[in-house]
Amino acid sequence: MGGKIDCYVDCNSPYSLYAVIYLRKNRKALESYGVEVEFFPVFLGGIMQNSGNTPPWKLPAKAKHGQLDGKRAQKYFGVELTPPKFFPIMTLLPLRSMVYIKEKYPRDQYETMLQELWTGYWGDHLDLSKPDIMSKVFARHFKPEEVEQIMKAGTSPEYKQKLSKITGRLVESGAYGCPWFEVTNSKGKTEPFFGSDRWHYMYQFLDLPFQDIALPEKPQTKL
Ligand SMILES: N[C@@H](CCC(=O)N[C@@H](CS)C(=O)NCC(=O)O)C(=O)O
Image 1 (cartoon, helix red, strand yellow):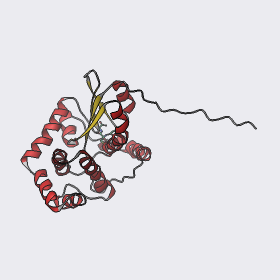
Image 2 (cartoon, rainbow, N blue to C red):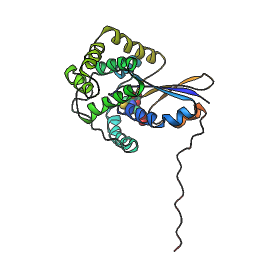
Image 3 (cartoon, rainbow, N blue to C red):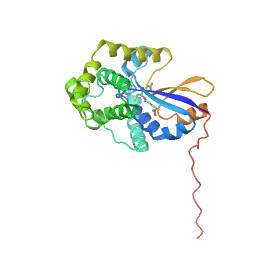
Image 4 (cartoon, rainbow, N blue to C red):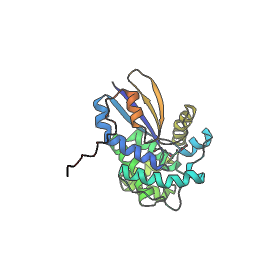
């Protein structure tokens, strides 16, 4: 056993949040089998454009079904999200800032802030593409001088380049949406997975002794 799950997310994607929630919740169990989990910010707009895909909400049938399926996912993962009127936003600023935070801060602080992007955007309906708003959300978790550094990095050529490198490499490897995963098993083999609903396939690939969804038969009552 052993292995690694690399999970690529963008805060324009609610399903990315479900992946973050799920993997953080199950990390202890995964680590007990030697499976590490790592989250990477990635630019979904760039993935869509460069893979030739289009956002699901642009196709009326997918948009309609997405309303239903989105609600089901929220119920399953225990969150309530409503798309803000200004959805989607340009997520480059929050994502580039998160690349910096990932480098400079402890894992837990980085992952908590990552999750907070959805709270600010989908929960509080804050447009994180706007620097003044984004910095206020960072200010909930970081000291003023840290926020200044984070915002500086988030608009710098260095972090623009870093996010673009992650996105470009992922597209080259075949990504077309978010959440995207690169999973490496104990034999060193890596395979891609798409979606916050593919854990059973990942666990098969990782050779983990997972319990599948169990539907117990309804107990028969004697009259
Ligand atoms: N079935 C997947 C759906 C994930 C999904 O729809 N992701 C969107 C972004 S929120 C996407 O990238 N879609 C690309 C596509 O469906 O081709 C899940 O449950 O996670």
